[in-house]
Picture 1: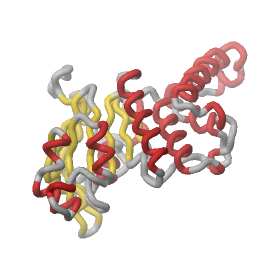
Picture 2: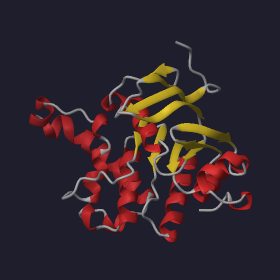
Picture 3: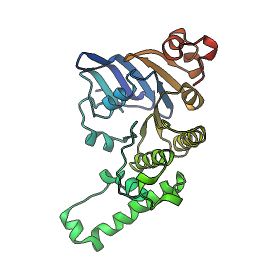
Picture 4: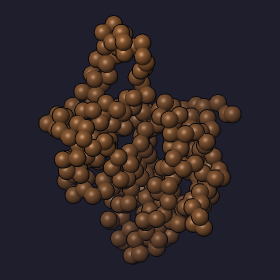
Length: 267
């Protein structure tokens, strides 16, 4: 195994293939995410974006190819082994716990950092209380950071979609990731909510030194905040590089927008 360094990719996907029956969701897909960047992945519906996220995070490991994180092959790791490595994700379809408050949902993001046990529970006041105070302080800082104070005690199912997406982002951030994978975090949002989310992603990246892999459907979002990007179509990568270069690529225009070159950077 190669030694990991700051000049090596933080995450490398090497010729990934994933089949679902007769459908090839990922077809020899390779890409690299460097430490300290926001890397965007876009493509039409059904292009393999969410399958890529699931392959990286162990939900549906690739049948061929490798996923390498910090120089370590994590291709066959289950999700419970992925999070402790410093990788957290959000979901395209909200995966919050209904019937629980915003605070409790975010606190669950720190579960792998906690040390549960019968002895610690029995001796709560001596062993576990100090840890609980530390975890709750970390969560309160995230609530303040993402401006969720006014809804911190509200049941999540009664919040509008934009706020629910922000809660899910907060829960992922509570895991203290070095790589944050966001699967269409702006789906279902209006323009104002999208602007808020874009600002929060940039704040997380710069203020908390988190590398971001942003999966999105909208080209304008990715070109606005990403350092580099890749475009998928039918499970294959058809272009990657700086956003201004990628969106003018004829293959991207044809596959993604279906319009003239001059409109490639919109919606």
